[in-house]
Image (tube, rainbow, N blue to C red; front, side, top):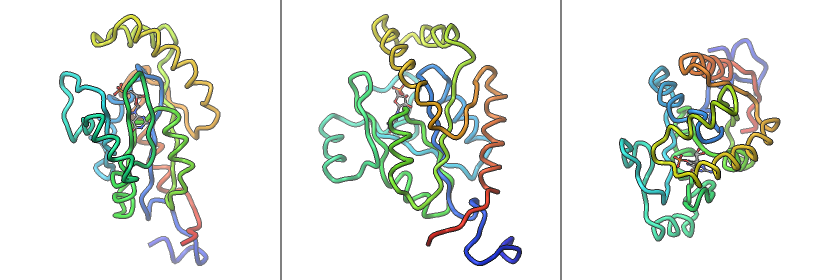
Length: 208
Ligand code: 5GP
C-alpha cells in the first residue's frame, strides 16, 4: 500500500519476513525476554533449535528445542538441514534451515535465540531477507554471575565456563545492530517491540 509513494524497486522491510536474532551471554535472560516478545507480537514466530543437551525441567520438545540424540544431530548435519550449528559446553546446538527460511518465505518474522557465533553465521548466510542482530546484556557482571548462580542446574565448573564464554561473547557486541539491557524484563521487552516495529518500517530495495 505504501508502494504508490515509492520509486520502483523500493519497499519497507515489513512487506517480507525479517529475521530477528537475539544473542547474549547465558544468564542475560534471552529466553524470558523472547517468550514475552512472542506473546506480545503474534506476527513473530520462534525458530526452534535442535540440541543434544538434555531437557531441563519445564522445557518442552518442539517448543523450546528439538531434543535429539547425538546420532540424530549428525544426521541433520549430513543432510544439510542446519543453517548453522555450534558446540557449547559439550553439547551441539543448531538452527534447522526450515525453521527460518520456510517461515520467512511465508512472510512471517522469525525470532532466533542463538549464541554469538551462530548469530554472526546467520547474518553471513546470505539469506534473501533482512537479518537484525540484537545483543542482550544484563545490567552488570555481578548481576550476570548472580543470575547464572541462581540456576540450580549449573555446577561450579559450568558457572565459571559460562562466565568465561560470556567475556568472549561481549567482545563481539560492535558487530551487532542493537544493544538491549535486560534490567527489568518489561522494559527490555518494550525495547525489543520497538526495534521490531522500527525494522518493519525501514526502507529497502529488494534485489529480487
Ligand atoms: P541453553 O543450553 O542455555 O539453552 O543454551 C546455551 C546457548 O546455546 C545459548 O547461548 C543459546 O542462545 C545457544 N543456542 C541455542 N540454540 C542455538 C542454535 O541453534 N545455534 C546456536 N549457534 N546457538 C544456539
